[in-house]
Structures are given as C-alpha cells and as structure tokens.
Length: 102
Length: 226
Image (cartoon, rainbow over all chains, first blue to last red; front, side, top):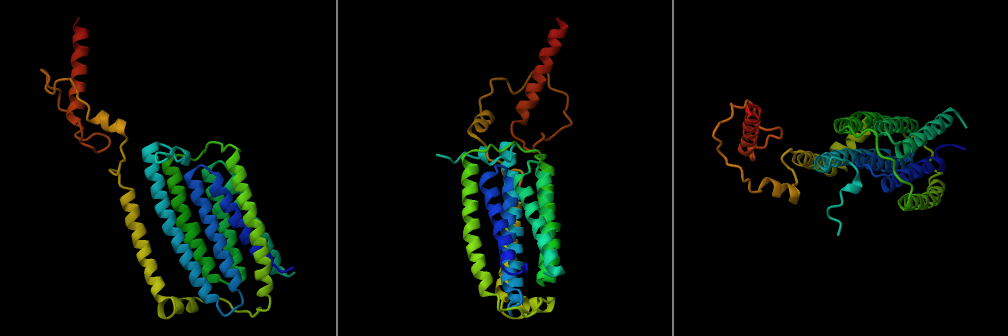
C-alpha cells in the first residue's frame, strides 16, 4: 500500500491528535507551545499531501510557507509571554497563572 | 511498495515516535529535541512528497530558528525538569478529545484519499513557481500582509519582554509605599555606597534602603562597644 494515499493523512491526523493531547494535558507553558507547533505541522502536512501531483503544488507550498510564518510569530509572542509569566510567578506552570479566575 | 514508500513509512513512524516523546517526556530539553527530530523527519516526508523547497524551509525555519528560540527560553529560565503531570480528569478529557479527533480525521482522510486517487501526475514544486506566485501574481497581497504580521509580532515581543513591565501585586505595592518610621537622616551618614542602582535598576526607596543599612551598622557598632 502506497504511503501517499490514506496513510499520509493518517500520519497528519495522529500528529494533530498528539498535539491536542499535549495542549490539553500538559501544565508547562513551553510544552504547550510545542504541542501547538505539532498541530501546525500536521496542518502543513495535510496541505502538501493533498496538493501532491495536482496542478496546485505551488499554491499549497505558498500556504505552507504562510503557516510556518504564523507559527514563527506565534512562538515568538508565546515565549515572550512565558518569560513575562516567569518574571511574575517564578514558574512556567500554567496552573499558577490563575489570577483572573473568578 | 517501492523504495520511496518504505522510506516514507519509516520517516512517518519516526515522526510519530518523536511526537509522542514531545507530549510525554518530562524533561523540557528532551521534549524540544524530540520536536526537532520530528521536524527533520517531516522534512524528509516533504522531500519524498515532491516539495524540496518546503523541506529546506522546514529545516531552516522550524528546526533552525523556532527550536533555537524554544531551547533558549528553556535554558534561560532553567525550567528543564518539570513537575510530574498527575493523571487525572484532565488527562482523561484530553485523551477523549484526541481520540475523537483521530476517529473523525481517519474517516475524513479515507474520503480525501479516495477522491484524490485519480491524480498521479508527477508535478513537483519548484522555487521559481513558488516565487512567481508570491512575488508576481496571485498571493502578492497576502505575502505583504505577512510582513506586517511579523513586524507586529516583533513589536509585541519587545514590549512584552521589557523588564519594567512588572505587574505588581497589591502586597508589593503596599510594601513599597508603606510608612517607614525610621528617620530619613541618621546622625552618622553612611560611607558612600558605590552601587548607585539596585539590582533591578529601579530607583524606588533607595534612600530608605541606604538608611536602613546605616542604622543597622550603627546599632551593631554600639553593641560591640558595649
């Protein structure tokens, strides 16, 4: 069975599910950001796999570049927020950042 | 099943294993290294899929720039070893939602694969094609907007990362503005302290600190004299 039929989409789905699992269960802010990166990579893989062999490879490539760019911006802002959080709470644990909880 | 398929299956398995490591490992540096490995394997898959430019971008930007940023923050904060995440209701909820995504995605991917099975023309991506799209026609405006997005992110990072952007708790505020009953001028002036600024670069209550130190020294010398 060739990899470029359903299996490549299965891989993307599994990556996305792992990202969601990490995002929902981990408590460390940095690992949560890494899980988001996993999900964005799964989206990229789906784009490219769907465009493989069609006339739209360049469009898919351009959109994947946009996704990578947004991921870079998101990582930069997220890590700056983690730094600010660490400065206030001396921890990167997301459970301690509960000041706005009612 | 030819060589490309075997290679792609191997890389896919390695990607999944590394992603599992990202989610499950407790050491943040090990998790980041697992993420780098997963990015490299994905880059290989892109190469086999026929996207050589994107494979290069994946390594340069993701494994190069973004992961260096992550490792930089981990090592700067010194939070490598993390507390054990308790297996509780939240883990169950996360696993349930992830499982739902897997089922939904599996159904969708079978559908997607059966729809696209007819297209097997060997078209590969070229740098010329991508740049034609990004710089000359089609996606020029979105590409310009990504520049604005990057600029906004950069400004935001500079503002958020400022050292004096310190959110003070009520207790901090009260401590800093509390009435200090000690006299501001002591009889014996302290020797000129070489440190003009305190450790935080803040110049609040520097006088009070110096006076407190001088009063302490004065008290000690009196005790010694007795």
